[in-house]
Length: 118
Picture (cartoon, rainbow, N blue to C red):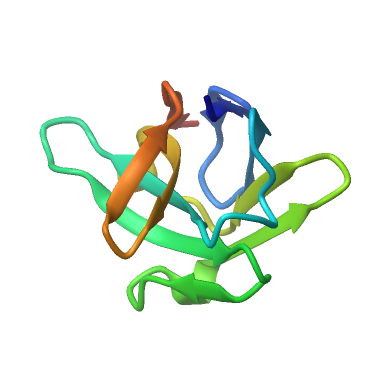
């Protein structure tokens, strides 16, 4: 059973950079044709796909976030990373990592709250 665990700072100041980690267990991030993606859900809104990194290392980003977002991985640590810069209060959300294919997302982390506030 694949399990995903997000971690990172709960509070970030505006204009700073957010760094989140998604630690994966029970499966390799370089196998099984999965895309390892980041989503976020602001309070009172629906989930938003931010981007992802495929098993082969290709990355894809939401056009609206591409200029501020970077997704990377460490295969040896079986970990996926999200970095977002120039944070704004409207980036406040619960951030999730998920693993899926073209058929949908099979595995989700429990999410981590990020609040952007001075």
